[in-house]
Image 1 (cartoon, rainbow, N blue to C red):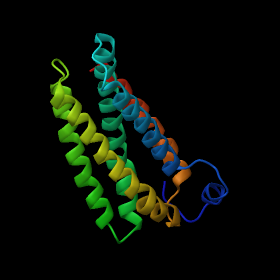
Image 2: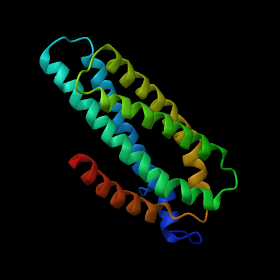
Image 3: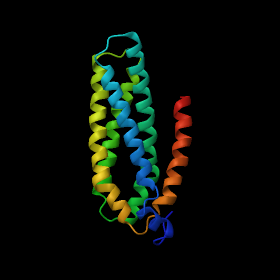
Image 4: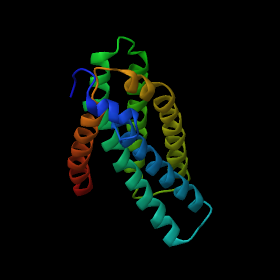
Length: 171
């Protein structure tokens, strides 16, 4: 995964998808789910209620897998090549807060109500904040780290996420 500037890193600067692109695709997908959830919050129909519960479950699953691949692969690789790790520590604290809220949402799925909607909304706000920091600060640092092969890491992240999604969806 780590090595000197490689042909793959040069390709990433010319537009080939890298680890940051994969993580950001997750961000965009979850953002769409949060938006869809919010659009359903005014409806009182049973089908809307079921759709919201299904979306909340999907959001939680996606975020758990996403956080885990960042914590297992992306953040440690960045720590290894970047002395300024304050942003990574902050990101990990944000993950912990999000995980706590995810657990509360999952625990409330049997009886979703006003607090359930509020928790999903706040989780969306947490994630928006976290995504902005990653896009504006962490991803640029990762892409400028010459000893980081983000192309190879993309494949590693994708493989691990696929494994996790299989496990999480079975649970």
